Amino acid sequence: MKQITASFNLVLPSRAKLFSAVETLAIGAAGGLLFLWANLPGGLISGSMIAVGAAALAGRPLSLPPHVTQTLLVLLGISLGSVVSRQLIQHVSAYPMTIALLALATFCSTFGSSLYLQRIHGWDRTSAFLAGSPGALSQITILAVERGADLPAIAVVQTMRVIILTAALPMLLALTGAAPAAAPALLTPPASPLGLLALLAPSLALALVFRLIKFPASWMFGAMIASSVLHGAGWIEGGLPNWVRSVALVGIGALIGSRFARMKIKVLLGHINAALGSFAIAILVSALFVGLIVATTNVRPADLIVAFAPGAMDAMLALALTLHIDPIFVGAHHLSRFVFVTIAIPGIVHLFGRPQDDVDD
Image 1: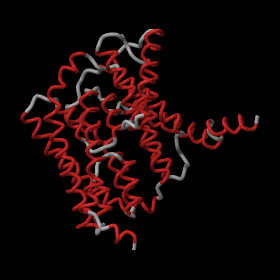
Image 2: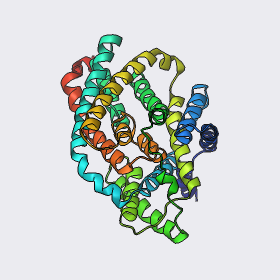
Image 3: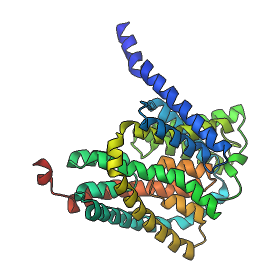
Image 4: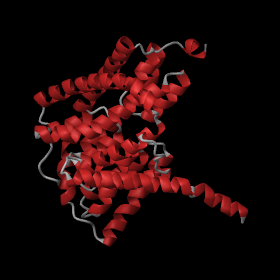
């Protein structure tokens, strides 16, 4: 009996963690609804993120348990897949060229940002390369620990980049008129109860398979691919109810904002200038490549802007959903960049970072 009780205690979160999760989601929902009421673009995710981030910086111990995070990512993946159609799948032929340019943009952005951090803020080369690398935060964190890099400074730069992008991109696309006027995600009707079961079961199953094989962003991409195949083939009509999709967006925003709960204000203020300058370099590089592709292809600017934005995969795909942007295009490009960063950054740090002997001393 004691072993059974212990097993349950390992699975179920403590009362403090449960209260923290409820508080996080409640604050996120309040912020998201406020932004939605104000009719701000991407209101649910950006409002939730800003509200939770502000509360976390104010000292609230906000967080979401792994099971809640995984559930939110699966719901996001299903929602992204539900807006896939045969028309979207037909655009896949344009991907090789834009993905190749994304790889080049990623390297240029990483080197540009790292050079700025070294020359202007006096960072060591290893910390600068890791902070300037867009995406793959878990791999970057592991490398930072292994190489003795400045982990708090890297965390500030990486977190601020995601926060600014998530808050600013919807505004930018709305002001420039680049975001599509139609809302395919909102026009998708809820599936029937049987259709929902037929949608949820394979989506969760593929997410679990992806998790077992350690696929990047496995919960989100597994559910997204299963949902995309079912909808793209015409086997499933409709998607998740709108309120479930809204919960997923609020939850992703809260998850991003809760990163500030592990960050001291003194550390944040100490590296804010480095974060903003590094972000400006990354955005400038991305904008140059986006402009080049827009001038030479028929790819929609809104799709390119979100696909090339140097932010986290989950945040950018959530924006794709709320801004009615092609999720296949955005997902393929952010997954490709994750692979680029995961493979290339360890080699770049080894070749150009400070020697291991310097770290050990």
